[in-house]
Image 1: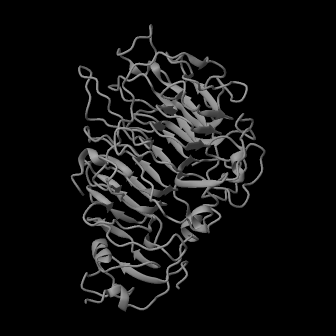
Image 2: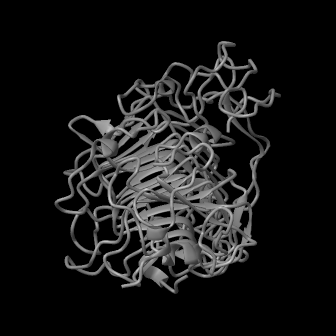
Image 3: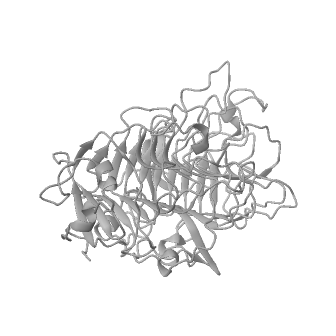
Length: 557
Protein backbone atom coordinates (compact mmCIF):
# COMPACT_ATOMS: atom_id res chain seq x y z
CA UNK A 1 0.00 0.00 0.00
CA UNK A 2 1.30 3.42 -0.93
CA UNK A 3 1.74 5.79 2.01
CA UNK A 4 0.53 9.30 1.18
CA UNK A 5 2.73 12.34 1.53
CA UNK A 6 0.26 13.67 4.09
CA UNK A 7 0.79 10.67 6.35
CA UNK A 8 4.58 11.17 6.31
CA UNK A 9 5.12 14.90 6.67
CA UNK A 10 5.42 16.33 10.18
CA UNK A 11 3.45 19.29 11.40
CA UNK A 12 4.69 22.81 10.76
CA UNK A 13 3.22 25.95 12.23
CA UNK A 14 1.41 28.55 10.12
CA UNK A 15 1.18 32.07 11.48
CA UNK A 16 -2.22 32.76 12.99
CA UNK A 17 -3.38 29.13 12.83
CA UNK A 18 -2.71 26.77 15.71
CA UNK A 19 -0.94 23.50 14.91
CA UNK A 20 -2.25 20.48 16.47
CA UNK A 21 -15.13 21.40 -14.95
CA UNK A 22 -17.45 19.51 -15.81
CA UNK A 23 -19.99 19.61 -18.64
CA UNK A 24 -22.67 19.07 -16.05
CA UNK A 25 -25.37 20.95 -17.88
CA UNK A 26 -28.78 21.34 -16.41
CA UNK A 27 -28.20 18.98 -13.48
CA UNK A 28 -26.26 21.65 -11.64
CA UNK A 29 -28.60 24.43 -12.61
CA UNK A 30 -30.98 26.76 -10.92
CA UNK A 31 -34.12 24.72 -11.40
CA UNK A 32 -36.54 27.40 -12.53
CA UNK A 33 -35.86 30.48 -10.51
CA UNK A 34 -37.38 33.32 -12.50
CA UNK A 35 -41.14 32.95 -12.67
CA UNK A 36 -42.15 33.58 -16.27
CA UNK A 37 -45.86 33.22 -15.64
CA UNK A 38 -48.24 36.15 -15.36
CA UNK A 39 -49.54 37.01 -11.95
CA UNK A 40 -52.51 39.19 -11.25
CA UNK A 41 -52.68 39.23 -7.45
CA UNK A 42 -53.44 42.47 -5.68
CA UNK A 43 -50.89 44.48 -3.81
CA UNK A 44 -50.40 44.13 -0.10
CA UNK A 45 -49.55 47.82 0.16
CA UNK A 46 -49.47 50.85 -2.03
CA UNK A 47 -46.33 52.54 -3.20
CA UNK A 48 -45.47 56.02 -2.17
CA UNK A 49 -43.97 57.58 0.89
CA UNK A 50 -40.59 59.19 0.87
CA UNK A 51 -38.64 59.17 -2.35
CA UNK A 52 -35.23 57.59 -2.43
CA UNK A 53 -32.16 56.66 -0.50
CA UNK A 54 -30.54 59.61 1.16
CA UNK A 55 -27.42 60.93 -0.48
CA UNK A 56 -24.33 62.38 1.09
CA UNK A 57 -20.64 61.92 1.63
CA UNK A 58 -19.11 59.59 4.17
CA UNK A 59 -15.78 59.00 5.81
CA UNK A 60 -14.04 55.85 4.61
CA UNK A 61 -13.22 53.08 7.01
CA UNK A 62 -10.72 50.28 6.88
CA UNK A 63 -12.68 47.36 8.19
CA UNK A 64 -15.12 46.15 10.79
CA UNK A 65 -13.79 48.46 13.51
CA UNK A 66 -14.75 51.78 11.94
CA UNK A 67 -13.15 54.61 13.89
CA UNK A 68 -15.19 57.29 12.16
CA UNK A 69 -18.44 58.70 13.37
CA UNK A 70 -21.34 59.17 11.03
CA UNK A 71 -23.40 56.32 12.42
CA UNK A 72 -26.98 56.89 13.42
CA UNK A 73 -26.15 58.04 16.93
CA UNK A 74 -22.55 59.12 16.39
CA UNK A 75 -21.20 56.20 18.42
CA UNK A 76 -18.23 54.07 17.49
CA UNK A 77 -18.79 50.46 16.42
CA UNK A 78 -18.65 47.98 19.25
CA UNK A 79 -16.70 44.72 19.31
CA UNK A 80 -18.01 41.97 17.09
CA UNK A 81 -19.86 44.18 14.62
CA UNK A 82 -19.55 42.82 11.10
CA UNK A 83 -19.94 43.99 7.55
CA UNK A 84 -20.84 41.87 4.54
CA UNK A 85 -17.95 40.83 2.30
CA UNK A 86 -14.63 39.12 3.12
CA UNK A 87 -13.81 39.52 6.81
CA UNK A 88 -10.20 40.18 7.87
CA UNK A 89 -11.24 39.39 11.44
CA UNK A 90 -12.73 35.99 10.61
CA UNK A 91 -9.79 35.19 8.32
CA UNK A 92 -7.31 36.02 11.08
CA UNK A 93 -9.18 33.98 13.70
CA UNK A 94 -11.05 31.17 11.93
CA UNK A 95 -13.07 28.48 13.64
CA UNK A 96 -10.80 25.71 12.34
CA UNK A 97 -7.35 24.67 13.55
CA UNK A 98 -4.51 23.36 11.41
CA UNK A 99 -2.98 20.27 13.00
CA UNK A 100 -0.66 19.88 10.02
CA UNK A 101 0.25 22.42 7.33
CA UNK A 102 1.13 21.86 3.69
CA UNK A 103 1.91 24.40 1.01
CA UNK A 104 1.24 25.23 -2.64
CA UNK A 105 3.07 28.00 -4.52
CA UNK A 106 3.43 29.23 -8.08
CA UNK A 107 7.15 28.31 -7.98
CA UNK A 108 6.52 24.91 -6.41
CA UNK A 109 6.80 21.40 -7.80
CA UNK A 110 4.38 18.49 -7.61
CA UNK A 111 7.36 16.22 -7.05
CA UNK A 112 8.21 18.11 -3.85
CA UNK A 113 7.07 17.12 -0.37
CA UNK A 114 4.59 19.97 0.20
CA UNK A 115 6.52 21.54 3.05
CA UNK A 116 6.87 25.29 3.38
CA UNK A 117 10.41 25.05 2.02
CA UNK A 118 9.37 22.70 -0.81
CA UNK A 119 5.78 23.53 -1.81
CA UNK A 120 3.66 21.80 -4.39
CA UNK A 121 2.71 23.53 -7.64
CA UNK A 122 -0.99 22.67 -8.02
CA UNK A 123 -4.08 22.41 -5.88
CA UNK A 124 -4.96 19.16 -7.62
CA UNK A 125 -1.75 17.54 -6.46
CA UNK A 126 -2.49 18.69 -2.92
CA UNK A 127 -5.81 16.83 -3.05
CA UNK A 128 -4.29 13.79 -4.79
CA UNK A 129 -1.77 13.48 -1.96
CA UNK A 130 -4.54 12.48 0.44
CA UNK A 131 -5.25 15.20 3.00
CA UNK A 132 -7.16 14.23 6.11
CA UNK A 133 -9.00 15.89 8.99
CA UNK A 134 -6.98 18.70 10.56
CA UNK A 135 -4.84 19.31 7.47
CA UNK A 136 -4.50 22.78 5.95
CA UNK A 137 -3.29 23.42 2.41
CA UNK A 138 -1.77 26.90 2.60
CA UNK A 139 -1.71 28.47 -0.86
CA UNK A 140 0.83 31.23 -1.43
CA UNK A 141 -0.13 34.47 -3.27
CA UNK A 142 -0.14 34.37 -7.04
CA UNK A 143 -2.22 33.24 -10.02
CA UNK A 144 -3.12 29.60 -10.59
CA UNK A 145 -4.53 28.56 -13.97
CA UNK A 146 -6.14 25.30 -12.87
CA UNK A 147 -8.57 24.47 -10.11
CA UNK A 148 -9.13 21.25 -8.22
CA UNK A 149 -11.68 18.44 -8.10
CA UNK A 150 -11.89 17.60 -4.42
CA UNK A 151 -11.84 13.91 -3.53
CA UNK A 152 -10.56 14.05 0.06
CA UNK A 153 -12.23 15.70 3.03
CA UNK A 154 -12.32 15.61 6.80
CA UNK A 155 -14.37 13.54 9.18
CA UNK A 156 -16.12 15.69 11.80
CA UNK A 157 -17.84 19.04 12.33
CA UNK A 158 -15.24 20.25 14.82
CA UNK A 159 -12.36 22.71 14.78
CA UNK A 160 -9.91 19.94 13.85
CA UNK A 161 -12.24 17.89 11.68
CA UNK A 162 -11.90 19.70 8.33
CA UNK A 163 -9.58 19.73 5.36
CA UNK A 164 -8.89 23.41 4.72
CA UNK A 165 -7.78 25.19 1.55
CA UNK A 166 -6.54 28.58 2.69
CA UNK A 167 -4.83 31.44 0.88
CA UNK A 168 -1.98 32.58 3.13
CA UNK A 169 -2.89 36.23 2.42
CA UNK A 170 -6.55 37.21 2.27
CA UNK A 171 -7.80 37.16 -1.36
CA UNK A 172 -4.26 37.23 -2.81
CA UNK A 173 -4.48 33.78 -4.45
CA UNK A 174 -6.24 34.01 -7.82
CA UNK A 175 -7.61 30.86 -9.49
CA UNK A 176 -8.58 31.49 -13.11
CA UNK A 177 -9.85 28.08 -14.25
CA UNK A 178 -13.11 28.92 -16.11
CA UNK A 179 -14.65 25.47 -15.58
CA UNK A 180 -14.49 25.35 -11.80
CA UNK A 181 -12.05 26.52 -9.17
CA UNK A 182 -13.22 24.02 -6.53
CA UNK A 183 -15.38 21.13 -7.76
CA UNK A 184 -17.14 18.41 -5.75
CA UNK A 185 -18.66 16.03 -8.27
CA UNK A 186 -19.31 12.51 -9.41
CA UNK A 187 -15.86 11.08 -10.06
CA UNK A 188 -16.12 9.11 -6.83
CA UNK A 189 -18.89 8.19 -4.42
CA UNK A 190 -19.37 8.87 -1.64
CA UNK A 191 -18.36 12.44 -2.33
CA UNK A 192 -16.01 14.21 0.12
CA UNK A 193 -17.28 16.08 3.17
CA UNK A 194 -15.91 18.57 5.73
CA UNK A 195 -13.98 20.97 3.49
CA UNK A 196 -13.27 24.69 4.01
CA UNK A 197 -12.35 27.11 1.18
CA UNK A 198 -11.05 30.33 2.74
CA UNK A 199 -9.68 33.59 1.37
CA UNK A 200 -9.29 33.14 -2.41
CA UNK A 201 -10.11 35.17 -5.47
CA UNK A 202 -11.89 32.86 -7.89
CA UNK A 203 -11.67 34.76 -11.17
CA UNK A 204 -12.67 32.83 -14.28
CA UNK A 205 -10.50 33.69 -17.26
CA UNK A 206 -13.61 33.56 -19.45
CA UNK A 207 -17.35 33.08 -18.99
CA UNK A 208 -17.51 29.41 -19.96
CA UNK A 209 -20.81 27.53 -20.29
CA UNK A 210 -21.48 25.65 -17.03
CA UNK A 211 -18.54 27.39 -15.37
CA UNK A 212 -18.88 27.57 -11.58
CA UNK A 213 -16.56 29.03 -8.96
CA UNK A 214 -17.48 26.41 -6.35
CA UNK A 215 -19.46 23.46 -7.66
CA UNK A 216 -21.15 20.77 -5.55
CA UNK A 217 -23.28 18.38 -7.63
CA UNK A 218 -23.96 14.65 -7.53
CA UNK A 219 -25.12 14.40 -11.14
CA UNK A 220 -28.44 12.76 -10.35
CA UNK A 221 -31.68 14.29 -9.10
CA UNK A 222 -34.14 11.85 -10.64
CA UNK A 223 -35.87 9.62 -8.14
CA UNK A 224 -35.77 8.77 -4.46
CA UNK A 225 -32.68 6.56 -4.87
CA UNK A 226 -30.57 9.40 -6.31
CA UNK A 227 -27.38 9.74 -4.25
CA UNK A 228 -26.48 12.69 -2.08
CA UNK A 229 -23.52 14.92 -2.85
CA UNK A 230 -21.39 16.35 -0.02
CA UNK A 231 -22.04 17.87 3.37
CA UNK A 232 -20.20 20.44 5.49
CA UNK A 233 -18.71 22.60 2.75
CA UNK A 234 -17.68 26.11 3.84
CA UNK A 235 -16.99 28.92 1.35
CA UNK A 236 -15.64 31.91 3.30
CA UNK A 237 -13.88 35.21 2.65
CA UNK A 238 -13.63 34.77 -1.11
CA UNK A 239 -14.10 37.07 -4.10
CA UNK A 240 -15.83 35.14 -6.90
CA UNK A 241 -16.53 36.49 -10.38
CA UNK A 242 -16.62 35.78 -14.10
CA UNK A 243 -18.15 32.27 -14.06
CA UNK A 244 -20.52 31.47 -16.90
CA UNK A 245 -23.14 29.74 -14.76
CA UNK A 246 -22.81 30.36 -11.02
CA UNK A 247 -20.43 31.80 -8.44
CA UNK A 248 -21.31 29.26 -5.71
CA UNK A 249 -23.47 26.29 -6.76
CA UNK A 250 -24.54 23.93 -3.93
CA UNK A 251 -26.67 20.97 -5.00
CA UNK A 252 -27.91 17.69 -3.60
CA UNK A 253 -26.45 17.78 -0.08
CA UNK A 254 -26.64 19.91 3.06
CA UNK A 255 -24.63 21.69 5.73
CA UNK A 256 -23.57 24.24 3.14
CA UNK A 257 -22.16 27.55 4.39
CA UNK A 258 -21.48 30.53 2.12
CA UNK A 259 -20.27 33.27 4.46
CA UNK A 260 -18.45 36.63 4.06
CA UNK A 261 -17.85 36.56 0.30
CA UNK A 262 -18.14 39.08 -2.52
CA UNK A 263 -19.74 37.48 -5.58
CA UNK A 264 -20.41 39.42 -8.76
CA UNK A 265 -20.66 39.28 -12.56
CA UNK A 266 -21.48 35.58 -12.88
CA UNK A 267 -24.20 33.68 -14.79
CA UNK A 268 -23.73 35.55 -18.06
CA UNK A 269 -23.75 32.80 -20.70
CA UNK A 270 -25.41 29.54 -19.62
CA UNK A 271 -28.93 29.60 -21.05
CA UNK A 272 -30.10 26.01 -20.57
CA UNK A 273 -28.76 25.54 -17.02
CA UNK A 274 -29.51 28.96 -15.65
CA UNK A 275 -27.25 30.21 -12.91
CA UNK A 276 -26.96 32.90 -10.26
CA UNK A 277 -24.48 34.44 -7.84
CA UNK A 278 -25.25 31.96 -5.04
CA UNK A 279 -27.50 29.00 -5.82
CA UNK A 280 -28.69 26.24 -3.47
CA UNK A 281 -30.69 23.62 -5.39
CA UNK A 282 -32.53 20.41 -4.41
CA UNK A 283 -30.88 19.97 -1.02
CA UNK A 284 -30.93 16.44 0.40
CA UNK A 285 -30.72 15.41 4.04
CA UNK A 286 -28.20 12.86 5.25
CA UNK A 287 -30.36 10.45 7.21
CA UNK A 288 -28.92 9.27 10.48
CA UNK A 289 -26.36 12.06 10.77
CA UNK A 290 -25.72 13.02 14.40
CA UNK A 291 -25.16 16.75 14.81
CA UNK A 292 -22.17 17.95 16.81
CA UNK A 293 -22.09 20.97 19.14
CA UNK A 294 -20.17 22.88 16.44
CA UNK A 295 -23.07 22.36 14.02
CA UNK A 296 -25.33 24.27 16.39
CA UNK A 297 -22.97 26.90 17.77
CA UNK A 298 -19.80 27.53 15.79
CA UNK A 299 -16.59 28.02 17.82
CA UNK A 300 -16.05 31.45 16.25
CA UNK A 301 -18.14 34.24 17.81
CA UNK A 302 -18.16 35.89 14.38
CA UNK A 303 -20.15 32.91 13.09
CA UNK A 304 -22.06 32.17 16.27
CA UNK A 305 -25.19 30.21 16.98
CA UNK A 306 -27.44 28.63 14.36
CA UNK A 307 -29.94 27.38 16.94
CA UNK A 308 -33.56 28.34 16.32
CA UNK A 309 -36.14 26.94 18.70
CA UNK A 310 -35.66 23.22 19.12
CA UNK A 311 -33.76 22.91 15.84
CA UNK A 312 -30.93 24.70 14.03
CA UNK A 313 -30.06 25.96 10.55
CA UNK A 314 -28.37 23.30 8.44
CA UNK A 315 -27.50 25.71 5.63
CA UNK A 316 -26.40 29.33 5.85
CA UNK A 317 -25.88 32.14 3.31
CA UNK A 318 -24.67 35.06 5.38
CA UNK A 319 -22.62 38.28 5.23
CA UNK A 320 -22.15 38.28 1.45
CA UNK A 321 -22.04 41.14 -1.07
CA UNK A 322 -23.71 39.93 -4.26
CA UNK A 323 -24.35 42.03 -7.37
CA UNK A 324 -24.47 42.14 -11.18
CA UNK A 325 -25.19 38.44 -11.61
CA UNK A 326 -27.25 38.14 -14.78
CA UNK A 327 -27.71 36.13 -17.95
CA UNK A 328 -26.85 38.60 -20.69
CA UNK A 329 -26.51 36.47 -23.83
CA UNK A 330 -29.78 34.55 -24.04
CA UNK A 331 -32.90 36.61 -24.80
CA UNK A 332 -33.57 39.23 -27.44
CA UNK A 333 -36.23 41.88 -27.90
CA UNK A 334 -37.88 39.71 -30.54
CA UNK A 335 -37.63 36.55 -28.45
CA UNK A 336 -38.08 37.45 -24.79
CA UNK A 337 -36.54 34.76 -22.63
CA UNK A 338 -36.70 33.89 -18.95
CA UNK A 339 -33.01 34.45 -18.36
CA UNK A 340 -32.90 34.28 -14.58
CA UNK A 341 -29.56 35.34 -13.09
CA UNK A 342 -30.41 35.92 -9.44
CA UNK A 343 -28.05 37.23 -6.79
CA UNK A 344 -29.15 34.55 -4.28
CA UNK A 345 -31.62 31.74 -4.95
CA UNK A 346 -32.96 28.96 -2.72
CA UNK A 347 -34.24 26.73 -5.49
CA UNK A 348 -36.64 23.79 -5.21
CA UNK A 349 -35.67 22.75 -1.70
CA UNK A 350 -39.00 20.95 -1.62
CA UNK A 351 -37.61 18.78 -4.47
CA UNK A 352 -40.76 19.32 -6.47
CA UNK A 353 -40.29 17.61 -9.82
CA UNK A 354 -36.95 16.13 -8.82
CA UNK A 355 -36.35 13.41 -6.24
CA UNK A 356 -39.80 13.87 -4.77
CA UNK A 357 -38.25 13.85 -1.29
CA UNK A 358 -38.80 17.18 0.46
CA UNK A 359 -35.87 18.70 2.32
CA UNK A 360 -36.94 18.87 5.99
CA UNK A 361 -34.28 21.12 7.52
CA UNK A 362 -33.97 24.87 7.96
CA UNK A 363 -31.92 27.36 5.94
CA UNK A 364 -30.81 30.90 6.89
CA UNK A 365 -30.18 33.75 4.43
CA UNK A 366 -29.02 36.77 6.43
CA UNK A 367 -26.97 39.99 6.42
CA UNK A 368 -26.39 39.98 2.67
CA UNK A 369 -26.18 43.10 0.49
CA UNK A 370 -27.71 42.25 -2.91
CA UNK A 371 -28.30 44.52 -5.86
CA UNK A 372 -28.45 44.92 -9.64
CA UNK A 373 -29.23 41.34 -10.62
CA UNK A 374 -30.79 40.21 -13.86
CA UNK A 375 -33.23 38.24 -11.72
CA UNK A 376 -34.10 38.38 -8.02
CA UNK A 377 -32.11 39.68 -5.08
CA UNK A 378 -33.09 36.94 -2.60
CA UNK A 379 -35.32 34.53 -4.52
CA UNK A 380 -36.97 31.73 -2.49
CA UNK A 381 -38.48 29.47 -5.15
CA UNK A 382 -40.43 26.29 -4.31
CA UNK A 383 -38.59 26.11 -1.00
CA UNK A 384 -39.79 25.78 2.58
CA UNK A 385 -38.24 26.38 6.02
CA UNK A 386 -36.14 29.32 4.84
CA UNK A 387 -35.53 32.33 7.10
CA UNK A 388 -34.54 35.53 5.29
CA UNK A 389 -33.30 38.11 7.80
CA UNK A 390 -31.42 41.44 7.79
CA UNK A 391 -30.71 41.61 4.07
CA UNK A 392 -30.42 44.86 2.09
CA UNK A 393 -31.73 44.63 -1.47
CA UNK A 394 -31.74 47.29 -4.19
CA UNK A 395 -32.85 47.40 -7.82
CA UNK A 396 -33.03 43.88 -9.20
CA UNK A 397 -34.89 42.11 -12.05
CA UNK A 398 -33.09 44.28 -14.57
CA UNK A 399 -33.06 41.76 -17.42
CA UNK A 400 -34.91 43.50 -20.28
CA UNK A 401 -35.78 40.14 -21.88
CA UNK A 402 -37.30 38.44 -18.84
CA UNK A 403 -41.04 38.67 -19.48
CA UNK A 404 -42.10 37.28 -16.10
CA UNK A 405 -44.32 39.33 -13.83
CA UNK A 406 -43.23 37.91 -10.45
CA UNK A 407 -40.27 40.25 -9.94
CA UNK A 408 -39.56 41.18 -6.34
CA UNK A 409 -36.36 42.25 -4.65
CA UNK A 410 -37.02 39.60 -1.96
CA UNK A 411 -39.67 36.94 -2.47
CA UNK A 412 -41.26 33.65 -1.60
CA UNK A 413 -42.70 32.21 -4.81
CA UNK A 414 -44.37 28.78 -4.85
CA UNK A 415 -43.09 28.43 -1.28
CA UNK A 416 -44.73 28.40 2.13
CA UNK A 417 -43.88 28.62 5.81
CA UNK A 418 -40.90 30.90 5.21
CA UNK A 419 -39.91 33.79 7.49
CA UNK A 420 -38.91 37.31 6.37
CA UNK A 421 -37.73 39.68 9.09
CA UNK A 422 -35.57 42.82 9.31
CA UNK A 423 -35.01 43.15 5.56
CA UNK A 424 -34.80 46.28 3.39
CA UNK A 425 -36.11 45.95 -0.16
CA UNK A 426 -36.07 48.87 -2.62
CA UNK A 427 -37.44 48.30 -6.12
CA UNK A 428 -37.34 50.52 -9.20
CA UNK A 429 -40.31 49.77 -11.48
CA UNK A 430 -40.03 50.91 -15.09
CA UNK A 431 -42.13 53.79 -16.35
CA UNK A 432 -45.26 52.64 -18.16
CA UNK A 433 -48.53 54.01 -19.46
CA UNK A 434 -50.60 50.88 -18.90
CA UNK A 435 -50.04 47.53 -17.20
CA UNK A 436 -50.00 44.55 -19.54
CA UNK A 437 -48.56 41.06 -19.19
CA UNK A 438 -45.96 39.99 -21.72
CA UNK A 439 -45.40 43.53 -22.91
CA UNK A 440 -42.20 45.53 -22.55
CA UNK A 441 -40.97 47.12 -20.39
CA UNK A 442 -41.26 44.04 -18.20
CA UNK A 443 -39.71 45.91 -15.28
CA UNK A 444 -43.07 47.68 -14.87
CA UNK A 445 -43.83 44.72 -12.54
CA UNK A 446 -40.76 45.17 -10.31
CA UNK A 447 -41.62 45.46 -6.63
CA UNK A 448 -40.15 45.07 -3.15
CA UNK A 449 -41.58 41.85 -1.66
CA UNK A 450 -43.69 38.93 -2.86
CA UNK A 451 -45.34 36.31 -0.69
CA UNK A 452 -47.01 33.68 -2.84
CA UNK A 453 -47.64 30.18 -1.43
CA UNK A 454 -48.76 27.55 -3.94
CA UNK A 455 -52.32 27.53 -2.54
CA UNK A 456 -54.48 29.08 0.15
CA UNK A 457 -54.26 25.84 2.13
CA UNK A 458 -50.46 26.13 2.40
CA UNK A 459 -48.87 27.47 5.57
CA UNK A 460 -48.47 31.23 5.28
CA UNK A 461 -45.13 32.99 5.05
CA UNK A 462 -44.53 35.57 7.76
CA UNK A 463 -43.28 39.13 7.31
CA UNK A 464 -42.22 41.38 10.18
CA UNK A 465 -40.05 44.46 10.75
CA UNK A 466 -39.20 44.83 7.06
CA UNK A 467 -38.84 48.13 5.19
CA UNK A 468 -40.09 48.42 1.61
CA UNK A 469 -40.01 51.16 -1.00
CA UNK A 470 -40.53 51.63 -4.73
CA UNK A 471 -38.65 54.45 -6.45
CA UNK A 472 -39.50 56.46 -9.52
CA UNK A 473 -43.09 55.31 -9.96
CA UNK A 474 -45.70 52.72 -9.10
CA UNK A 475 -45.20 49.02 -9.82
CA UNK A 476 -47.94 47.21 -11.71
CA UNK A 477 -47.64 44.64 -8.93
CA UNK A 478 -47.92 47.19 -6.14
CA UNK A 479 -45.02 47.81 -3.81
CA UNK A 480 -45.71 44.46 -2.09
CA UNK A 481 -47.64 41.53 -3.57
CA UNK A 482 -49.09 38.86 -1.29
CA UNK A 483 -51.69 36.23 -2.04
CA UNK A 484 -52.90 32.74 -1.08
CA UNK A 485 -53.01 33.59 2.62
CA UNK A 486 -49.84 35.63 3.02
CA UNK A 487 -50.15 39.00 4.79
CA UNK A 488 -47.74 41.96 4.66
CA UNK A 489 -49.05 44.45 7.18
CA UNK A 490 -47.91 48.07 7.09
CA UNK A 491 -48.35 48.20 10.86
CA UNK A 492 -45.81 45.42 11.48
CA UNK A 493 -43.61 46.49 8.54
CA UNK A 494 -42.74 49.94 7.18
CA UNK A 495 -44.27 50.47 3.72
CA UNK A 496 -43.38 53.21 1.26
CA UNK A 497 -40.40 54.15 3.38
CA UNK A 498 -36.93 55.18 2.30
CA UNK A 499 -34.36 53.21 4.32
CA UNK A 500 -32.08 56.23 4.63
CA UNK A 501 -29.00 54.63 3.11
CA UNK A 502 -26.00 56.96 3.00
CA UNK A 503 -25.57 56.79 -0.78
CA UNK A 504 -27.11 54.09 -2.97
CA UNK A 505 -27.80 54.81 -6.62
CA UNK A 506 -28.63 58.45 -6.07
CA UNK A 507 -26.78 59.52 -9.26
CA UNK A 508 -27.30 56.39 -11.35
CA UNK A 509 -29.09 53.17 -10.41
CA UNK A 510 -26.76 51.10 -12.60
CA UNK A 511 -27.61 48.13 -14.79
CA UNK A 512 -27.31 44.35 -14.61
CA UNK A 513 -23.66 44.70 -15.70
CA UNK A 514 -22.67 47.99 -14.05
CA UNK A 515 -22.81 49.00 -10.42
CA UNK A 516 -24.90 51.96 -9.31
CA UNK A 517 -23.13 55.24 -8.77
CA UNK A 518 -23.12 55.05 -5.01
CA UNK A 519 -23.19 51.65 -3.29
CA UNK A 520 -22.88 52.64 0.36
CA UNK A 521 -25.61 50.77 2.24
CA UNK A 522 -24.70 52.28 5.62
CA UNK A 523 -27.58 53.84 7.54
CA UNK A 524 -27.54 57.65 7.67
CA UNK A 525 -28.48 59.46 10.90
CA UNK A 526 -32.23 59.33 11.36
CA UNK A 527 -32.72 56.23 9.23
CA UNK A 528 -36.00 54.45 10.07
CA UNK A 529 -34.04 51.17 10.01
CA UNK A 530 -32.11 52.10 13.16
CA UNK A 531 -33.49 50.19 16.15
CA UNK A 532 -36.44 48.77 14.20
CA UNK A 533 -35.16 45.20 14.01
CA UNK A 534 -36.62 42.10 15.64
CA UNK A 535 -33.95 40.34 17.69
CA UNK A 536 -33.62 36.55 17.60
CA UNK A 537 -31.24 34.17 19.35
CA UNK A 538 -29.76 33.07 16.02
CA UNK A 539 -29.00 36.66 14.97
CA UNK A 540 -26.21 38.85 16.38
CA UNK A 541 -27.04 41.90 18.47
CA UNK A 542 -26.64 44.22 15.49
CA UNK A 543 -29.88 42.78 14.10
CA UNK A 544 -31.59 45.49 16.15
CA UNK A 545 -31.00 47.60 13.03
CA UNK A 546 -32.91 46.50 9.93
CA UNK A 547 -30.86 45.53 6.88
CA UNK A 548 -27.35 44.16 6.55
CA UNK A 549 -25.43 47.13 7.95
CA UNK A 550 -25.30 48.26 11.57
CA UNK A 551 -25.88 51.98 12.07
CA UNK A 552 -22.44 52.37 13.71
CA UNK A 553 -20.75 52.10 10.31
CA UNK A 554 -20.36 55.14 8.10
CA UNK A 555 -19.62 53.00 5.04
CA UNK A 556 -20.99 49.54 4.30
CA UNK A 557 -19.87 47.30 2.83
